[in-house]
Length: 331
Image (cartoon, rainbow, N blue to C red; front, side, top):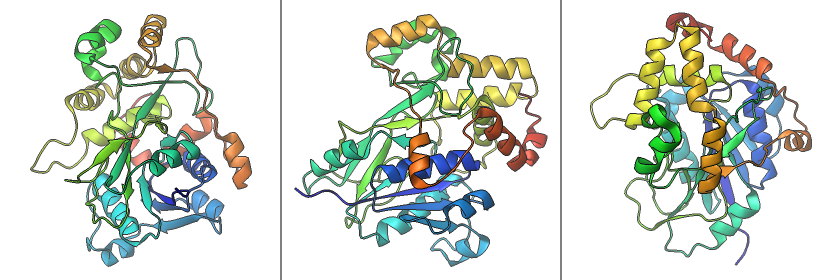
């Protein structure tokens, strides 16, 4: 069986260092094309990526949305992600399309391609399992990609409280973010896009080689702001969008946002492992302590980015000054 041909699509609204690292790392894995949709202007990203091979950058302006099938900008970011993914899915000549966010880094191109090549024609989509970045005890985070990775905890209802104590209910299977991973969609099957997997699609499988490294909150500030965005989302009729654990995170963050000590305590409790927690996860086989560093990929792509926490947070504060003022977030 030949090498699978695959595209990647992502709708992004993040500081330039994260976006450029994501682009460089993704290109290093060998996709045919990376379709990057900028949810709002980012001149540093637009300038850096101008003319870069295998990257198609689309700026999602008001005119873009008026010309889209939706005829207007969807109010929720997930709606915008779905529409952009749909456009790529229906137009790409690739055999597969992988839909991820720019805080999600695929483990390897070879592993993904081996997974895809192993799927028979009856398989319409393949889920890519997730691992979530956390900081170990004692680590002072200097770079945005520092840390280790925890996997979902089996039998979490029983095991979770033993590992995480009073914070167990803030986590879903031991993760702050999603536990389901993301998907590779086989093209030409009329699949209906959704964030993590297609809607009502038959014959989905879970890959066994590739996985995602999810940086659910690149820095403490980033994580806090991410939760506050969820708390401020417009409310619509229909099923609740977020699992109870995620709701607990963003509702508590909204309550304590103006108190820096409480914000820091919440972030530390959810995004840093104590020595006992690390030992427990290690014993369960759900702690990946391999380092991740996209610096080589950046160099290979001819891109430059300051991956320090200080540079990332400075750009984040500048980009989202209005939101910080409205929420009073103190961190």
